Amino acid sequence: MHTVLISGGGIAGPALAHWLRGHGFGVTVVERGTGPRAGGQAVDVRGVALDVVERMGLLERARQVRTRMRGMSVLDPEGQEIHRSTEATFSSGRLDSEDIEVLRDDLVDLVHEHTQEGVEYLFGNSITALDEDGAGVEVGFAHGPSRRFDLVVGADGLHSAVRRLAFGPEERFAHHLGSYLSVFRADNFLDLDNWQMWLNDGDVGFGIMPVRDNSELRVAFGFESGPLAHDTGALRRIVVDRLASLRWEGPRLAEAAQAAPDFYCDAMAQIRMDHWSRGRVALLGDAGYCPSPLSGQGTSLALVGAHVLADSLARAQGDHTAAYARYEERMRPFVTLNQDLATENPGGPASEESVTRAKNAFALDS
Image 1 (cartoon, rainbow, N blue to C red):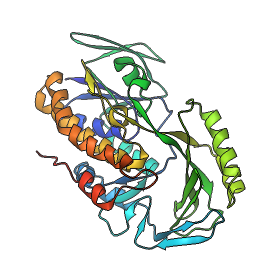
Image 2 (image 1 turned 45 degrees about the vertical axis):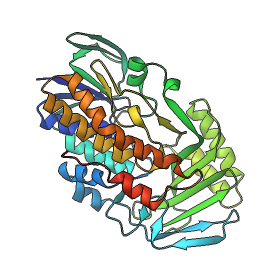
Image 3 (image 1 turned 90 degrees about the vertical axis):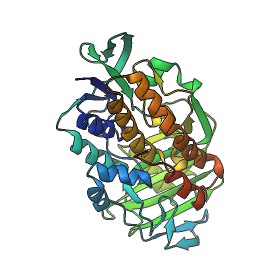
Image 4 (image 1 turned 90 degrees about the horizontal axis):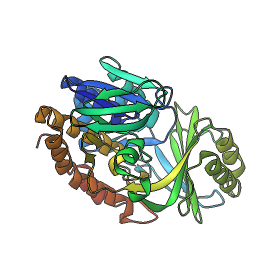
């Protein structure tokens, strides 16, 4: 039995674990968090990614926990409505679409629960060293003894430790897109009923959506900035200060950001690489080809990539060189189209035509 270590317990890693387990691989997932992570924005599962979720046996469950927005309002800096729509929202697109929007933590929980049997999970741990030879990879961990695996896959996000260990420093591959995104929870102090609110004020803006049967809010706050140090404490202070300066609901949003246990803030950036594999190590999802949240396609790329990588490894019957080459050949055009969505219209969403073309530009069985 070939053994595979996957770094990252979000969506991409467990999705890959599902497919590899079905192909008879021995799979271990290591995740630095102490369990499946709570919080995060709503994510979209679009186009061909819906087919992947359906083949995983999770589509109906994902639909049950999807968001149920009725529409959105766009506000001026004073909080006055200047536009409303009951046909589409900025977060999910057209409300009559077959695509689904689901909270990231709900999708993480679904995939993790679906893969607990037959997959070894190592929570509260991380990879610190990779030592490859002709027969496998000796992996060092932050906690516990080193272990040996046939293959290693980095599905550990924008700031991938596997990518750094196998390919080099992040700055070689990260392309900053000029802004930052913060996401955090808050009480539903606006009493929103399945209705989103969006506001832009100069170089900052936010979207607010009610979730969990309107019992809480998820706030997505963006601000323009050049690259900043990846320091959560410093980034939280920046977000709190900028929110506090807003004219509409700034103080309450700043208070929520300060108190949020699931506070997140990171650069809007893309990872662009000439190759997603080196030796026995490969990259999946944001670790190898993050399109940034501006594309709306990060989750879909992760799900499709997991299916393609597992299928390529199964077809190659142990020849990882051939498998990784096939994975890259099949995925790269799809990745390029979807990364382009983030830069098509600076300051706004890509056109509906571009999104439709990109999300469907792949055939699973080709």
